[in-house]
Image (cartoon, rainbow, N blue to C red):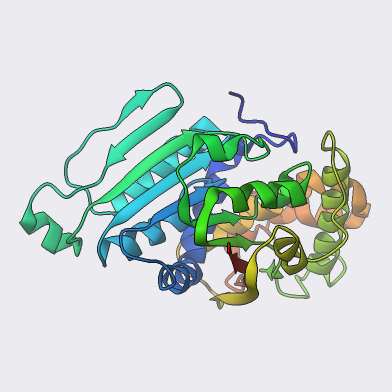
Length: 321
């Protein structure tokens, strides 16, 4: 299966950006995972749909391992990302030994620690089983490919599918009665640049975000069979038949000069904006962006100590009756 999906994006090519984002999002992701895991019964099954590089499921794995164990099912349409996610979740569960095998389109990995001593060292008293499944989230037969789940999680993936409302209906069908469906969508756009950069017109980041919004409209319009969803995510969850629908948010806050890896993330982030939003920027803004991204430029962003990262991840959730 190609790394390209319905949105015509090569997600395997974005692996470095996904990894960097997972690292910087880790505190927010851990808080979200803990809050959702608290809703789950003993030995639950958690399905991460569109798992990407696996960052969120590493926190689900740690949350399950700290209690009575459980099962995590990783699902993605891009095999390269699924492989990385499997490795990351295995490491997060504290596996000392173990093996993975391929059986058609399903990869199974038991993450039981190799000994009681290793379990104690890793803080894992119970086994966490990990399964990895290559599948298309827009496939209406998805519930037939997966076990029923106590938590169905999808982070920033539904908006890349042709019919978002139908996709939420499919996600709901994967959840068992009483199970939770949670979507990470929306929130507040991330900021990382000072308003005045010392070159070009001040306020570049505001214009980059506006250009990104225009690109997003075009991306949705370019998806074959795209269906509008002219209402918010909580309404979409209610229309899918979920009860007790609500939302909460988690702050991602790394003040300047930021942690290790922030510069690389900002470089990847701005490079993507330079590619996707270029036609919606002025010549001056394109020149400013090129200077920021050029290691040989005196304005190279890697030389700055005023980069930061500030944004909000929002989670919309409901329970299947």
